[in-house]
Image (cartoon, rainbow, N blue to C red; front, side, top):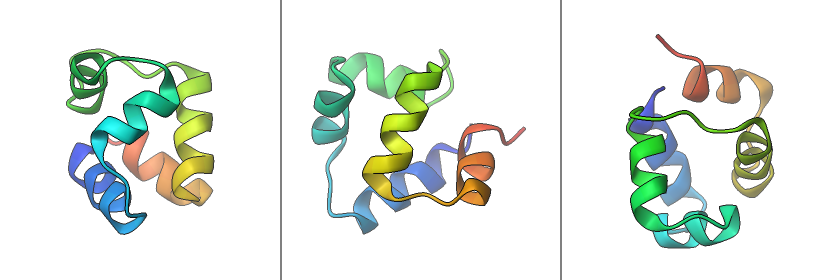
Length: 67
């Protein structure tokens, strides 16, 4: 999980973490834990974030599947 890249793309899209969490229907603490890699995003959450931030397949791999 590359949380720094996710944070950058979120800011680039003009969104806050609160807004992203709301779109995912989760609270901010849960979003923080997922973003920082303490727990995993579900497939549907990745799809929502991909659409919300207009991520390319390469960006999705770089952000969500980085070691």
